[in-house]
Image (cartoon, rainbow, N blue to C red; front, side, top):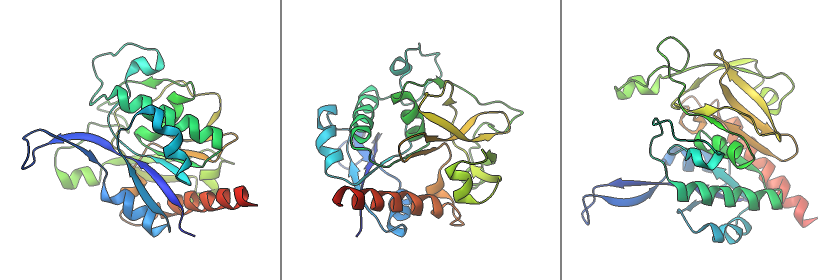
Length: 245
């Protein structure tokens, strides 16, 4: 069985033959390829009406929340400090609705970068709006494309967590492209990994099969992050089998 994974996209405005500022729902091919390697079929989602969340989630077997712009601080009850980038309040509401339905169905969810942040915010957590420094693991992102590919830092996994057992190591290097991070952790989550400065780099739900990572495993070129997608897809298969038994 190839499970169907609903995958969020991000609306960007780019020039096309039709308009110099066309709104396109975009998704990196790396997400699609990672899911294909794990044996799943990705279903790309547009920024739909939140009222459609129930129908969307019910049509899929798993949910992947991908990267994108910053979450509107009003979503977690705070004021924008003037550092947020590419905010889309409608996407925030839609993704909250998707997560609420996934929670009701006890559907496995994988959150990547913004996706992990939204998992936390939708469950009652908050965000640090800017974490970049000149002398820590979260440095300003370089401008050169090849340097961006090497941009990252080490993380340390929390002993006894699913991700620690999955990767089979206490520490690993991860790519890093985020300027915001989890602040107050929602009570339903545990921290799975941190950077050297204490920034939360991964979380897991205490009851549901929800995992969130702050880095971009779909862009890890050496394949070492394929274990994350494989485990996610396998959890989806098991969830489907359990629902049919």
